[in-house]
Length: 109
Image 1 (spheres, rainbow, N blue to C red):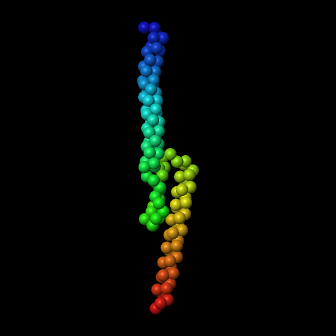
Image 2: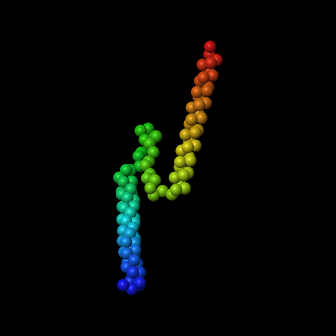
Image 3: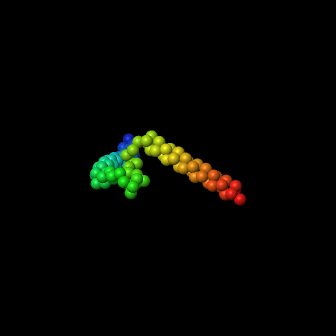
């Protein structure tokens, strides 16, 4: 067998599996993108099903659900930072109240 035939055999042996892997990856990517579009469409349908609650005492503390899948990363980071600041502020307010309460108890005797 001539030397170039071995080159053709090895090239075929490498290119066929590589082309199969690329084809499968492309198919999976297309399915993933269609799934993401379907989820986005489903999210908009769910948002349409849940109307904005009227202002009442029952809904005063409720927050509207917003899926984080399709939100901007910077917006999510700012939301997390704001929540952390609010938590720290509430913790500090509780701590200050406990300190004042403790001082009142200590000086009552």
